[in-house]
Length: 510
Image (cartoon, rainbow, N blue to C red; front, side, top):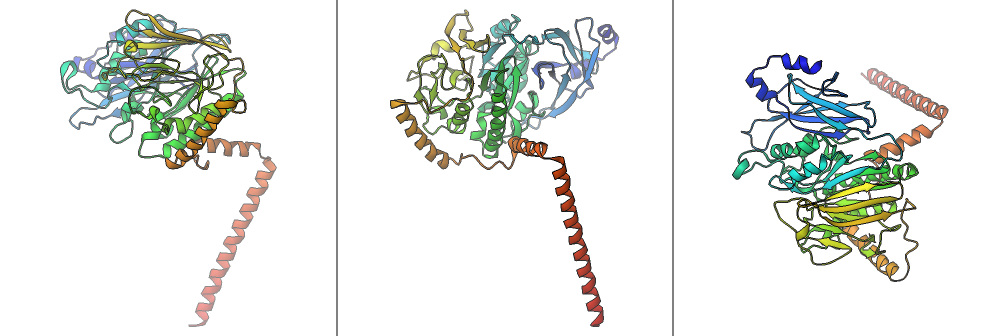
């Protein structure tokens, strides 16, 4: 047995300390048949993952890639982060796995892959804005270990701040990210931990280094680059999108256009696939709207996040937008341009927006001053969300208190006609107000330089070029290529002859 072989290998105490895997967590790869395993060690070690159908039957082995992660404090020793991809996994199966670095390992861990059944109803555990001093994580771990969740959706702001060192108290001198990753290990080593970046992941140099190295997400590179901090994944009847609200607040504004072009191409493709994957659910940290008693972006009429995303999400019929950042819980009616379109969730005509940033921040609660559909500030502190997508037309959402488990809020959403939302049905006062806000938004787009740029870079441009090439007749491509070759050849001949003539004239005049 593999496990027995490893147990018999001699290791020194120093090697065990330097190569003992910690901070283990998993995430889906580019599909549900792939799982990424990540972990950390204090020393540089040769690393791999053993896995299989049982704790005594882990005969498959995958080697890990490694990245050295330095801290802001130059005196602090670096950490070594490992990533291993487990692929060709069978649906609906429990897999046991064991990260090993220089043959040092912990006890086997496990996860379960989603079923292949097309009628499968995925369930998600959702929260954001948890600090290392939060009292919620232990009980969230108990909830996660019930075995019913297909993913944890963490919507930004990890630990506060991942790159900082703790100045005093229980964790004095330790890096916040190391503490936080150990705290979530019980959850994240068993349930895929899918993330979106928040404002507290922005480092002083704006490189998101800790976040980009510590996590690996689908359909982007690792470490996660600034040019692709967004991704999408099909999970049963859900097309899940994670985007970065932070692109609107960085000094370098190029990432706004890179994300917009990617989102446009991704949403266009997702809409074509709606017969098989009807729901589109988007995750992003900072909200477009909020009704808290503060001056955050979501309170402003010229909100950068709203200006950058609302029209796109409306045009492509995004069903649900799940956000955090505000340390409270808020549920909005379907809205467009600040106008409530209906006070129910039956066949909504605009995205439904939810804010669930109350899982446990050191900054306390954000109080509220106005009401949309449902809001809760003080009583919502230390609460999380649960989402179950029952089928192509129905989903259920609820907000739950960490302590005691009381359901604080719940809704059923019915959508019988997934697809793009349309403004053509707006009438009366709704239409007047929306038209007025459209005019204001046009001015604000100009003011903040947020108008869409020509598609000369990014994934959307590459996709369109690829489609043009794929759609062209091969004979035409060969003909054009040959013509270009002949033109270049003739040009070279002319240049050579001209140069030869100049040399002859020069010799005659001597």
